[in-house]
Image (cartoon, rainbow, N blue to C red; front, top):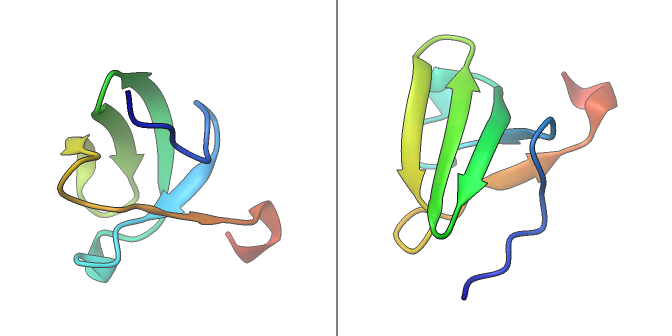
Length: 60
């Protein structure tokens, strides 16, 4: 089982798609992370393929 250093409600960015903007984690089920991004809407990310970067709330 993969362990992620964020939980639902945390803010992240996708380093491979920075133009998506900041995203808020909606849910984490196994390796699937649902994130609602500013510029791309809701996306399901495979945590085994893409490593999301957690950002601090003051960076929003």
